[in-house]
Amino acid sequence: MSQRIGIIDLGSNSARLIIVEIYKNRAYNLIYHQKETIRLSQDADKNQQLQPVAMARGMTLLQNFAHICKLHDTDKIIAVGTAAIRNAHNGTEFVENVKGETGITIKIISGETEAKLGYIGVINTLNVTDAVLFDLGGGSTELTLIKDRKAEKFISLPFGAVTLTERFNLQKKASEAQLASLDTFIVQELDKIPWLKNLGVPLIGIGGTARGIAKMEQKRKNYPILKLHNYRTSSIAFHSLWQDVKVMSCEKRRKIPGLSNDRADIILAGLAIVKNLFEEIESTQLIISSCGVREGLFLQYYFSQGGQTETLTDPLTQSIHNTLLSYNGNTTHAYHVAKLANNLFNEWQQILNLNPADKILLHVAAVLHDIGISINYYDHARHSAYLVENARLFGLSHREQIMASLIVGWHHSSSAKHAFNKIYNEFLDEGNWQTARKLALLLAVAESLDTTQMKLVEKVTTVFTNKKAELRLEAMQAIPLELQSINKHSKWFKKETGFELIISQ
Image (cartoon, rainbow, N blue to C red):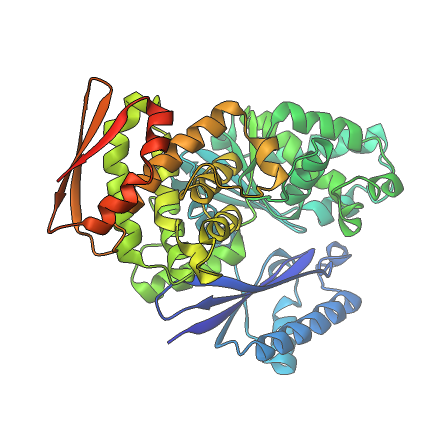
């Protein structure tokens, strides 16, 4: 039986609702997302009290969230409150009022729990080994040291983009003295964390400031796609952005392409925290994660229902499988084609001049090559390409996902006149296109070997002699349809390899 899970993250600066549907086959898919700025922590530093105006904004928004969950027939709502609520003397009172007015039970979580949830959301959606993860919110900043994909250290710092903006009066234009005082404060706080120094590992950022950095960077570079998750930027690019933004008035910051109006007044404080993290850690790279506490909450629930551990060793494999199930793909056929494609890759890698890393792209394309049938069987290779391009495949770079999409789109023929999005040309060089054609050939042959979708061909061995490539097929019975299908690719094979294709059974 399917179920719909609502996840609410009530932060200091903004609140978010996601609704995720878990299908009968255990696939899951995001079906709704809403984010609103509420500034729950606004002026809360004055007496450690949530202010009436801020609480009213929060209550109105949560009433809307409750209504949306009802409209979507949500079976369960998991809601958490973070720094603004846990730091306020009247936070518990506010939570009780929310329960009475909306029926939503908000769990006030500790900084360590918040950091752990962010870690679960990140480690299951990014292929990283060692890093420092920061979750920079309005009222707190959580830091997690990741080593060998495990969380070794957690700490929650009691300041964020909103609280530092108010403390140092950065809402308008900041003077050099204000920025110097801000820097001094952040450095003093970071110096209290001995395990943070000189690590030389990438930074991973979640939260509105991190997303804002990515959006501004992408606009500056005319980045051709809007994906934020796994977007990567260098410390050099970040410091260039910082130098430009720090001298601007709030009015000018509102005009920065990629920066939302409701973040213009607090972005300086957020950027200052990130700048000092770069310097303290001696990091050279920032990885943006659009998955954080909300995804951590969902995955924690999802894994508990299936008896799984909270961290995956291979996010890509899980996300490929989830995508396949989401489109009701034929899993038996998909994984058999992937097995045959892997077999062919091992034998043809040298002759096609492919790199070992290309095998991952072939596997992704092989498992998902037919998901476009869910749109329309006719021309389903093109539909599959679009779905792969836009799927939530965790563990691939943006370029790799575009490559996998291209392989899928060509898996019937590399001469197919698919109208590939202009981003393909902006992401891929000539070498990428050549690699994609070769991998598409491997996929086309592998798919042909399972034309009947009965797994009749169990193994393929290739013998290369005198400009001839003999495919020796081990099959359970006669395979006339498979043979007819594979022979259609003989010209393509000769074009890519220079060998004449011969089939024997």
